Image (cartoon, rainbow, N blue to C red; front, side):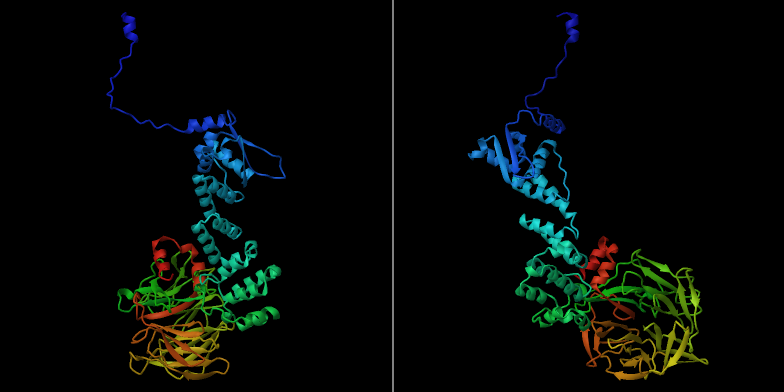
Length: 591
């Protein structure tokens, strides 16, 4: 061999017979090749259902591509069926444009899905056994459910036996019923679908009147589709016993008569209308008078700490619980700064999940009561009264109280502030008082009213269902510490008269007192030994035990203030906070 020839040779490495290498090839070249040869060497044509509005068009394609992508085509073209040898195949159950999109996606490996074609693509892909497209359509629809399409998607999911999507659409309609019931989809429901929806305990409404309005609107929209039997069955799904007499009297005569004739309708509150008690309290045995915010279900006894930013320490009574517009989401307000420091009022903004100091807090007193009158926040001291100016972020002094009192009970009725009892500081003497004062913010004046029968401090006051003011519990006695009492006294604002009512089972002071389903509900408190929650019926003048102390309760005795919200308001207005493990744990306590 010449030298030149030797230089041109390439030595080869000898490989053992048992050595192998797996080479993975990129399919991009294959896809690109399919694009370019899309209409070359086609051996079969297909088309979908006939469409009178367009000429007959056949889709040219390749048997091998159809078989490779579709289990349905693979089975058909391999079978002895007549279509397996035909050059033209029609699929009458699939719209032609949908079939064309699916076959083009076999070549391009792309498919455009939107609200107008997702259900059709899903149904056709399910028939043709195009698994990836089926899952893609499901995912798209899961993310697209809203008030305009939930029923359409749910019906499509039922046809295709997709249980999780059916459940998601139903859950959406239940959760957002107050919005859904005003949509066009709602009016398109059939009677069976509507009956199932409004019969659910999970229907999220503020009150039963929203359900009645929705059903009557559905019946009026298409009266021909509802026979007398169907009408009666739907009306029976409404919890008529929960409708107010004022609502019924405002309805047209025929609708009101139909509802009054309803027989066996459910009487149980829907879950969204069931009350939860939100409490703010402090534990005098904890270091720094640690504040606690908790939520209690008074019927199951379930209790959980509210998953908010930590409240300030030195959380001393009378800690106040303030709600604006009846919604928990807006504010808590508490007293801060006991132990010699000037108090500072904080509000809790649930949307921001943080505590915010209001003003400079330069109060010449050590204890405050926080109330809201006509959306204005007031801080009531021993003898001072301040109103918070949100624009200037400072407190404005108002009329001086006629007596130096602290640890009074306070309540707002018809735009006026009423205070009851407390510890009276008069000429260097200190004693428990039965003094009642009223403040009118419109005139910025205080006046004294007839005294309550029992002198006491650390009581609580609440507006009853009859519009009277109930003053419950507190400390009484001549010695400094006093003793908790179980007395209940009611003040009639119209007649300026007091009445003594049935006493609680358990003496308690610094308790929580709220109106719960037309009854007064006493929660927790200091010194009381016995039942933790008890309720008072103002009509029968009787107290009944609602729940013993919940086993998970953080603070079984303490200075309580309470507010009651239905689950609808609580969950609706706290939507922006419903994230994270702490919120998941909290909500799970009340499911």
